[in-house]
Image (cartoon, rainbow, N blue to C red; front, side, top):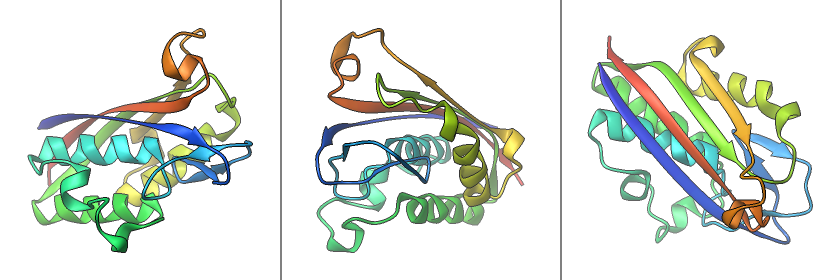
Length: 157
């Protein structure tokens, strides 16, 4: 078995959709990024890549490449799963946390879990997503952006 962890954070910006865990969230701001800015999926990708010893998301999908401009991060997650498939690895389980003062994310969590599980080709009970605030502290607490952390266990097939 192999364990990996991932982290990502992006600042809010006007004029963009807010996408987290592959789900469009109804909110007045989106996240600034080269891709769609899905911090949750980016953290998951880094956790999976790290557990497999495959460096990080920026190495595989550089923000200097127009190929990944505004890309749907679910496309990246499926590509990461294909990379671990080729190494005869699979996701045992995944635990992730979104850190955001606003918007409220609870209504979207189950859909996030289902979409992430589908992209990783695992049962939804292998994927856990939580959301928390920082009680007004730090950049997330001030409403400047959103962060995400993920931990994953990979198993041999």
